[in-house]
Length: 135
Image: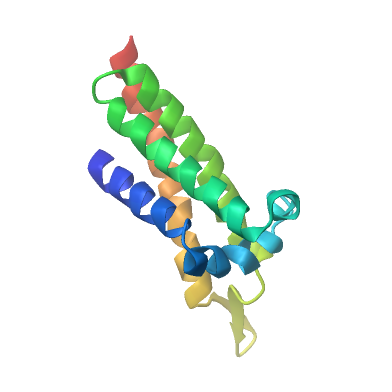
């Protein structure tokens, strides 16, 4: 679980530091009141770089937590904040919910964002896991 989370954070974080990755998250970030200020302050490319670096930092801290549990707690806490914000994007991003015969369903975009609800749970678990090792 730890290595899967770290791999995902490294991969997603490094992708956000590309032009294509930055452009891909513009509609997600711009429509979310918890983080839309970020792109207004830094612009989409620098803002996306900062988000990517934050993901990589979280991954490094979680990986370091295998040897120094306190670092894993910090990495998990960063991940909780990140995944909480991205989990709310299911609600705030236009097109993430679609209606079929009056019933609301998650679109492919919504399902893509929903994975971060699961990652949020894993992040809480990692804080607990490293917390037990730290004492």
